[in-house]
Length: 331
Image (tube, rainbow, N blue to C red; front, side, top):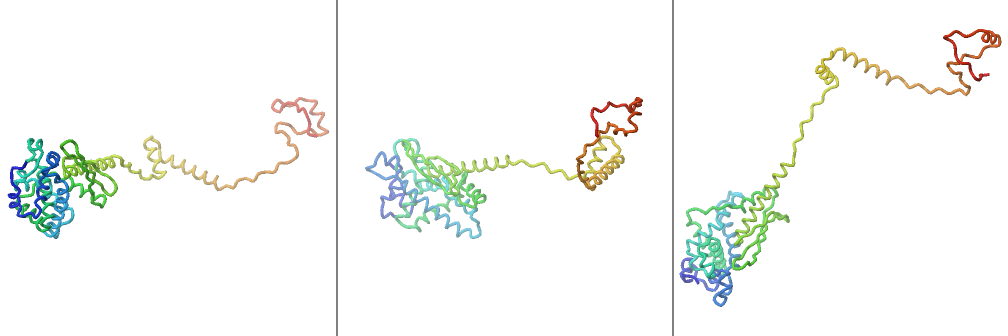
């Protein structure tokens, strides 16, 4: 049970609720609703959801009017500092919101009234209740009056803001988050998936929706860094192509390295080129027609005339003109 009275909180907030049940619902944790449904049957998660959306609108309008020359990325960073868990928890502590929370026995004994995530969620839930009961202007001043009283916005590691800048630069899109809660015992764990278009970039888990989305953004940043690193590692630089070298220059380099006289080689190359050119220019010979008459073998002497037959038969031929007698004639 809370240690403070709801009427005291209404005075601090500056809103007299027409429906006090909304304020009670905004301060009820799910653990208390499960244990004592007869006192407060509904927890504050629906009002927290509404308050988060109202808070985004309030901060966006405020920065749009305050910084007319700022770009989208700069305003996104500033808004993240205004709505992060640490900042909202600081605003809740300034109100003493922990004293008015309806918590289950286990969470209350474990120091739940000072837990930043519970305080931040309760602050958003109260903002949602004020919006429903008193309107947008009351919710606007409820938040901004307290935010301006802080010495400075409480900064934390803003993975969502960093991811938005990276995705907008690389893909020209704005990332969006799909969050869902699942009950696990007395603690409820949220799961968030961040997308760029239809491509899921990262998944995160946490006790609150904000924590889960921050974890999803951090996972997405790691994945994008990994992709960029692997892409750079896969690209190998090609060695520069060698400059074209003329045939003559290449020959001179080889000759110099081998100790050959380049002038003599130049002459030989020139002669070879002239000979090649001459051969190329010379027309191909026409094929000769074969005669039907039998050709006489080159090593066969011509047949003797009638008057010389006896002379040839009478004496041997000189040694250098001897040949084997033909076995047949050409008559």
